[in-house]
Amino acid sequence: MARTKGDHDARRREVSEAVWRVLDAHGFGGLTLRAVAAELGATTGLLTHYFATKRDLVAYALDLLEQRTLDRPRETAPDESAALRVALLGVLPLTAEAATSNRIWVSSWDPALADAGLSRDHARRYARSRDRLRDLVAAGQRRGDLAAGDPADIAAGAQAFVLGLVVQSLFEPAAFPARRQVALVDGYLRSLSPMPR
Image 1 (spheres, helix red, strand yellow):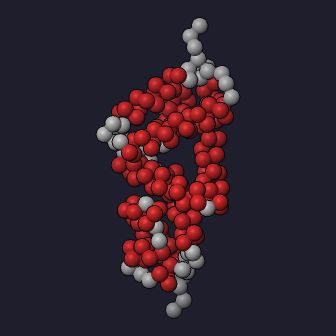
Image 2 (cartoon, one colour; image 1 turned 90 degrees about the horizontal axis):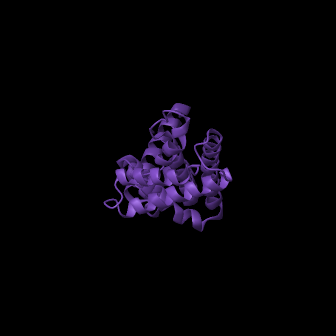
Image 3 (cartoon, rainbow, N blue to C red; image 1 turned 60 degrees about the vertical axis):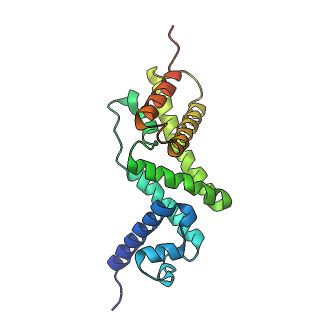
Protein backbone atom coordinates (compact mmCIF):
# COMPACT_ATOMS: atom_id res chain seq x y z
CA MET A 1 0.00 0.00 0.00
CA ALA A 2 1.35 3.44 -0.96
CA ARG A 3 2.27 5.88 1.79
CA THR A 4 0.14 8.99 2.04
CA LYS A 5 1.32 12.53 2.58
CA GLY A 6 -0.14 12.26 6.08
CA ASP A 7 2.11 9.24 6.77
CA HIS A 8 5.13 11.17 5.50
CA ASP A 9 4.26 14.24 7.59
CA ALA A 10 3.71 12.10 10.70
CA ARG A 11 7.05 10.35 10.18
CA ARG A 12 8.79 13.69 9.67
CA ARG A 13 7.33 14.90 12.99
CA GLU A 14 8.63 11.73 14.66
CA VAL A 15 12.06 12.36 13.15
CA SER A 16 11.95 15.98 14.32
CA GLU A 17 11.15 14.89 17.89
CA ALA A 18 13.98 12.34 17.80
CA VAL A 19 16.41 15.00 16.52
CA TRP A 20 15.30 17.27 19.36
CA ARG A 21 15.78 14.55 22.00
CA VAL A 22 19.30 13.81 20.71
CA LEU A 23 20.15 17.54 20.75
CA ASP A 24 18.76 17.88 24.26
CA ALA A 25 20.79 14.94 25.53
CA HIS A 26 24.02 15.36 23.56
CA GLY A 27 24.11 18.75 21.81
CA PHE A 28 25.27 19.12 18.23
CA GLY A 29 28.43 17.15 18.98
CA GLY A 30 26.31 14.03 19.48
CA LEU A 31 23.95 14.61 16.56
CA THR A 32 24.54 11.77 14.11
CA LEU A 33 22.31 9.77 11.80
CA ARG A 34 23.01 6.72 13.95
CA ALA A 35 22.01 8.52 17.19
CA VAL A 36 18.77 9.79 15.67
CA ALA A 37 18.00 6.35 14.23
CA ALA A 38 18.58 4.75 17.63
CA GLU A 39 16.32 7.34 19.25
CA LEU A 40 13.61 6.48 16.69
CA GLY A 41 14.16 2.74 16.99
CA ALA A 42 14.80 2.72 13.23
CA THR A 43 17.66 2.10 10.84
CA THR A 44 19.99 4.73 9.46
CA GLY A 45 18.68 3.65 6.04
CA LEU A 46 15.27 5.02 6.95
CA LEU A 47 16.81 8.36 7.88
CA THR A 48 18.60 8.69 4.56
CA HIS A 49 15.14 9.20 3.04
CA TYR A 50 15.09 12.47 5.00
CA PHE A 51 18.78 13.39 5.25
CA ALA A 52 21.31 12.29 2.66
CA THR A 53 24.26 13.47 4.77
CA LYS A 54 25.06 14.49 8.31
CA ARG A 55 25.32 18.09 7.07
CA ASP A 56 21.70 17.89 5.89
CA LEU A 57 20.75 16.59 9.34
CA VAL A 58 22.61 19.44 11.07
CA ALA A 59 21.04 22.06 8.77
CA TYR A 60 17.61 20.61 9.50
CA ALA A 61 18.33 20.58 13.24
CA LEU A 62 19.29 24.27 13.12
CA ASP A 63 16.02 25.10 11.34
CA LEU A 64 14.11 23.02 13.89
CA LEU A 65 15.88 24.78 16.75
CA GLU A 66 15.11 28.19 15.28
CA GLN A 67 11.43 27.31 14.88
CA ARG A 68 11.22 25.92 18.43
CA THR A 69 12.87 29.05 19.75
CA LEU A 70 10.43 31.28 17.89
CA ASP A 71 7.48 29.16 19.07
CA ARG A 72 8.57 29.18 22.73
CA PRO A 73 6.01 30.98 24.92
CA ARG A 74 7.25 34.43 25.83
CA GLU A 75 6.11 37.28 27.95
CA THR A 76 4.29 39.93 25.97
CA ALA A 77 5.15 43.59 26.35
CA PRO A 78 2.50 45.51 28.30
CA ASP A 79 3.26 48.55 26.15
CA GLU A 80 5.70 49.72 23.48
CA SER A 81 8.19 51.06 26.00
CA ALA A 82 8.69 47.54 27.41
CA ALA A 83 9.08 45.82 24.01
CA LEU A 84 12.90 45.96 23.88
CA ARG A 85 13.17 44.66 27.44
CA VAL A 86 10.80 41.78 26.69
CA ALA A 87 12.73 40.94 23.50
CA LEU A 88 16.05 40.78 25.38
CA LEU A 89 14.59 38.76 28.24
CA GLY A 90 13.10 36.35 25.68
CA VAL A 91 16.61 35.34 24.63
CA LEU A 92 17.84 34.48 28.12
CA PRO A 93 17.78 31.08 29.87
CA LEU A 94 15.25 32.21 32.47
CA THR A 95 13.37 28.89 32.48
CA ALA A 96 14.42 25.25 32.15
CA GLU A 97 13.04 25.11 28.60
CA ALA A 98 14.87 28.31 27.60
CA ALA A 99 18.08 26.98 29.19
CA THR A 100 17.81 23.80 27.09
CA SER A 101 17.26 25.80 23.90
CA ASN A 102 20.17 28.10 24.70
CA ARG A 103 22.48 25.21 25.55
CA ILE A 104 21.66 23.66 22.17
CA TRP A 105 22.13 27.03 20.38
CA VAL A 106 25.56 27.50 21.93
CA SER A 107 26.55 23.93 20.99
CA SER A 108 25.46 24.71 17.41
CA TRP A 109 28.12 27.38 17.03
CA ASP A 110 30.88 24.77 16.61
CA PRO A 111 29.43 22.98 13.54
CA ALA A 112 28.25 26.31 12.11
CA LEU A 113 31.72 27.84 12.36
CA ALA A 114 33.23 24.79 10.65
CA ASP A 115 30.92 24.90 7.61
CA ALA A 116 30.66 27.98 5.39
CA GLY A 117 27.02 27.32 4.43
CA LEU A 118 25.87 26.73 8.01
CA SER A 119 27.86 29.78 9.07
CA ARG A 120 26.03 31.92 6.51
CA ASP A 121 22.70 30.53 7.73
CA HIS A 122 23.60 31.39 11.34
CA ALA A 123 24.75 34.87 10.31
CA ARG A 124 21.36 35.42 8.62
CA ARG A 125 19.52 34.26 11.75
CA TYR A 126 21.45 36.66 13.96
CA ALA A 127 21.03 39.46 11.42
CA ARG A 128 17.24 38.98 11.48
CA SER A 129 17.34 39.17 15.26
CA ARG A 130 19.40 42.38 15.11
CA ASP A 131 16.93 43.83 12.62
CA ARG A 132 14.06 43.18 15.04
CA LEU A 133 16.04 44.76 17.87
CA ARG A 134 16.97 47.73 15.63
CA ASP A 135 13.30 48.40 14.97
CA LEU A 136 12.53 48.29 18.70
CA VAL A 137 15.45 50.63 19.43
CA ALA A 138 14.32 53.09 16.77
CA ALA A 139 10.79 53.06 18.20
CA GLY A 140 12.20 53.64 21.70
CA GLN A 141 14.24 56.57 20.43
CA ARG A 142 11.18 58.11 18.80
CA ARG A 143 9.32 57.86 22.12
CA GLY A 144 12.30 59.39 23.95
CA ASP A 145 12.90 56.22 26.03
CA LEU A 146 16.36 55.61 24.55
CA ALA A 147 19.30 57.88 23.88
CA ALA A 148 20.12 59.02 20.37
CA GLY A 149 22.53 56.99 18.29
CA ASP A 150 22.56 54.63 15.35
CA PRO A 151 19.76 52.11 16.07
CA ALA A 152 21.65 49.37 14.21
CA ASP A 153 24.75 49.88 16.38
CA ILE A 154 22.70 49.94 19.57
CA ALA A 155 20.90 46.77 18.47
CA ALA A 156 24.23 45.06 17.74
CA GLY A 157 25.46 46.03 21.20
CA ALA A 158 22.25 44.78 22.82
CA GLN A 159 22.50 41.47 20.97
CA ALA A 160 26.15 41.08 22.00
CA PHE A 161 25.26 41.90 25.62
CA VAL A 162 22.41 39.41 25.83
CA LEU A 163 24.32 36.60 24.07
CA GLY A 164 27.25 37.14 26.42
CA LEU A 165 24.85 36.91 29.35
CA VAL A 166 23.44 33.67 27.91
CA VAL A 167 26.90 32.11 27.87
CA GLN A 168 27.74 33.24 31.41
CA SER A 169 24.38 31.97 32.67
CA LEU A 170 24.84 28.56 31.05
CA PHE A 171 28.32 28.10 32.48
CA GLU A 172 27.53 29.48 35.93
CA PRO A 173 23.80 29.08 36.58
CA ALA A 174 24.23 29.51 40.33
CA ALA A 175 26.00 32.86 39.79
CA PHE A 176 23.44 34.02 37.22
CA PRO A 177 19.99 32.96 38.41
CA ALA A 178 16.96 34.35 36.59
CA ARG A 179 16.54 37.31 38.93
CA ARG A 180 20.15 38.41 38.38
CA GLN A 181 19.81 38.05 34.60
CA VAL A 182 16.72 40.26 34.69
CA ALA A 183 18.49 42.81 36.90
CA LEU A 184 21.46 42.92 34.54
CA VAL A 185 19.19 43.50 31.54
CA ASP A 186 17.41 46.28 33.42
CA GLY A 187 20.74 47.89 34.29
CA TYR A 188 21.87 47.62 30.68
CA LEU A 189 18.69 49.26 29.46
CA ARG A 190 19.11 52.09 31.99
CA SER A 191 22.52 52.74 30.45
CA LEU A 192 20.75 53.31 27.11
CA SER A 193 18.33 55.87 28.56
CA PRO A 194 18.72 59.52 27.62
CA MET A 195 20.75 61.59 30.06
CA PRO A 196 18.55 63.76 32.29
CA ARG A 197 18.72 67.43 31.45
